[in-house]
Image (cartoon, rainbow, N blue to C red; front, top):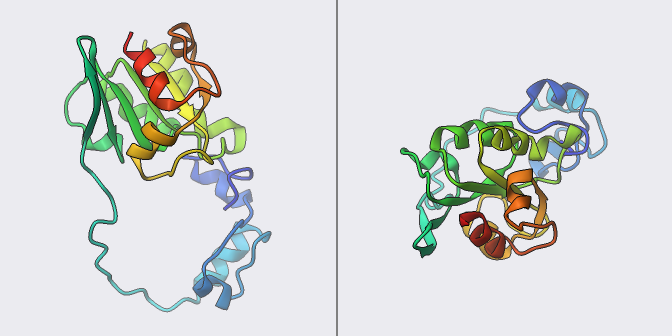
Length: 190
């Protein structure tokens, strides 16, 4: 579904969304870009039962320490869910979207700062829906532009990301839209 027609982490908005892309199997069932998700979903009901496949190394669930100084560390990972304890002195560069679900997971970890992908912003700016949540919790937050870093690759968030949005706490630390994510993460440590 097109991010412009559906809000991230809000399944109800899928009912009025439109298809932006589909794979060959869906196309064989008649699914086409531009059609309503409801119609595409009905067509997909005709698909044969899927089969299990092994997708070894599909995700890098490791936590990578990419920077450390006396203030704390900058950690990159594919998901905030790999963190099991609080990280009050650290900044996290995560590969997911910066929507509400990201915010909920970050609130449990309580880092000094966190950033993820804006996923094209999405309907109602849902791709950055976590930024106000993080602000309220006293956590500096930012998002990187979807076209600057690979969703699913925390190292790409850190290495390739360009900041597209911030909360006020991150902005007060000097984080600006257009800045490289690595530079922004170091500022968030301050």
